[in-house]
Amino acid sequence: MMRYSTLLFLLALAAVLSAQNINIDLQATLTYPSQNLSNIWGYASGSNEYALVGAKNGLSIVNVSNPGSPVEITQIPGPSSNWREVKTYQHYAYVVSEGGGGVQVVDLSGLPGNTPNYHSYFGDGAINGLLIKAHALHVDVTAGYLYVYGSYLSNNSNGGKALIFDLNADPYNPQYVGKFDSNFSGNSNYVHDGFVDNNIMYSAHVYGGFFSIVNTTNKSNPTLVTTQPTPGVFTHNTWRTGNTLFTTDEVSNSYLASYDISNTGNIVLLDKIQSNPGSNSIVHNTYTLNDYAITSWYKDGLTIVDVSRPANMVQVGNYDTYPNGSGSGFQGCWGVYPYLPSGNILASNINAEGTSNGTGELWILSPTYVRGCYLEGQITNIATGLPLSGAQVKILSTNVTETSAATGFYKMGQRQNGTYTVQVSKSGYVTYTTTVSLSNGVLTTLNVALSPVGLPVELVSFRARAEADDALLQWETATEVNNAGFEIEHHAGNNHWASEGFVAGKGAADQPAEYEFRVPDLPPGAHFFRLRQLDDDGKSALSEARAVMIGEKAFYAAFRPSVISDIGELYLFSEKPAEVYVEVFNAAGLPVGLSWEFDLENERVLQINAEVLPRGLYFAVVRTEQGGSVLSFLKI
Image (tube, rainbow, N blue to C red; front, side, top):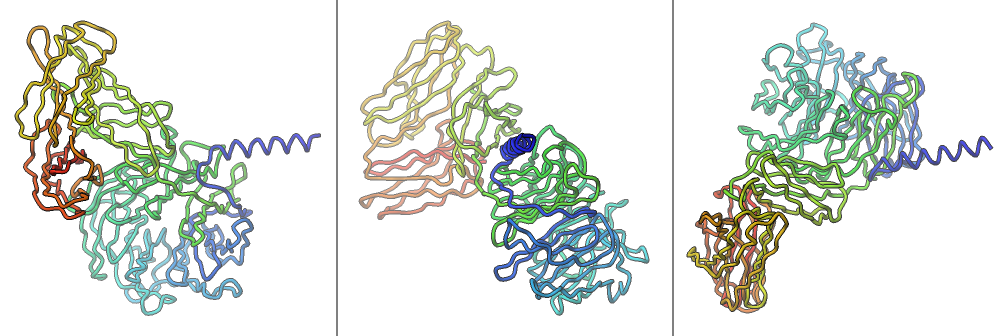
């Protein structure tokens, strides 16, 4: 009976733990009695996959080809140390440790049948025999150079600066070729970790709290390009994909951060994200694969973050390898490796949870990669049209909250798709609530104009749509005070606003009120509408403009993507040859000076350069004799 009860308890516990883990499944674990684990890497040859595990007593090589049944092949002995890092180049592994031993080079070509050959390299040339120990390393696989970080030379001449070794002639016997001889103040010259590709190094200066970008083309004299502080001012590791650099800060309440490095003269912090906001958890190492960041978070285990929109990172997966621990502290998951051909992720736990110090764990996990659901837009003042900063945008029934920036723009997202209620609020303004439909991999744009508290009329929505040759206008107010009514104003792309009619207001009402107005028998083409709200005392306020297109359906147009920072594409199709006129208008219905006129044969893609435009909402109005379209896009 006791065994049965215990089994029920374990099954229930497994169900609870499984519910906490999202889009990552456990395949197996392998325990290391009497050994802590540190970082981890991987290697594949033919159909075989291997975990290269930094264990206390040396490099452990584990066959994980059958992920449900990992088997240790051998352990390459090394100095006893709780810090061991490994990277690979071709069929060689390079290992460093805080315990000494220089750089250990391991030939993996004989796996799985033969025990690998290995030797320790202590430097040559200008540092012949001087390289004692190091903290981390990375290989520039494009150029064929090994970079060793946090190194200690026996003559005490280096201070942890990055050392560079040539692997091109003989990867088994590296050749020292230079170092990044920086001249920062204090102990900021110490490089804790880094990423290098094609002779550009992104080094993490943990004690300086910044990363540096360094051109290492001239190995004997690398050139500093720039530096950039990171959010936690304790820069632990860096990893780059395209024009985006990702960093981690190894401190309590830390962040995974993303930066636009396309212009090294103006590096921009794009976004920062936490695995478990409010828990004070500590991030450690991050790596990217196919626009996902796979990151170890000590007590929170590991996470998968969708970084395809690096200014709007969304966590889409996690697995807690230390489920009964949380918050600050250096227990749990040290490192991850996501690059095996099978797609499986390797992770290293420093110690198995609930055990005494010295029982490390290798975890083999299977991820399911999904894109996030993105919600972005701009918050403005409905009375002035100016952007509002500090407005809180919240997806109700979730913990997803964002605050608008000085430009009024906000960016947020979540993993789960569906229909959600979104609330936008700011002190001194009427709270706005609406529903949105969110889909994985799809950007949903929600622009909101908030009404200041105390306005005679609090307009919460204004919509316009075409019905045959008519335009149907619908709007809603939250409250009204001394509201005489609404004058409907219209122009057909010529910027000459004219009145189409008047709708009397409710006067004074503290309940929502709905209005509707139809403008009949409009000619084909683009039509803009706005509301001029009139008070009893004669004062007035204008709404944002709305646009509709009246015309035949023998014509099709689409603008992609709907949110741009520079170039957008206008796709055009017509069943018959047509003369096409395209013009761009702002949210007030005013032309911005961008227009095109051309003959269209079947289809065409028109590139629209929005770099010259201020941030905001715009309409691309397309006119032909057969019909047309009004397409909105957001410049960020």
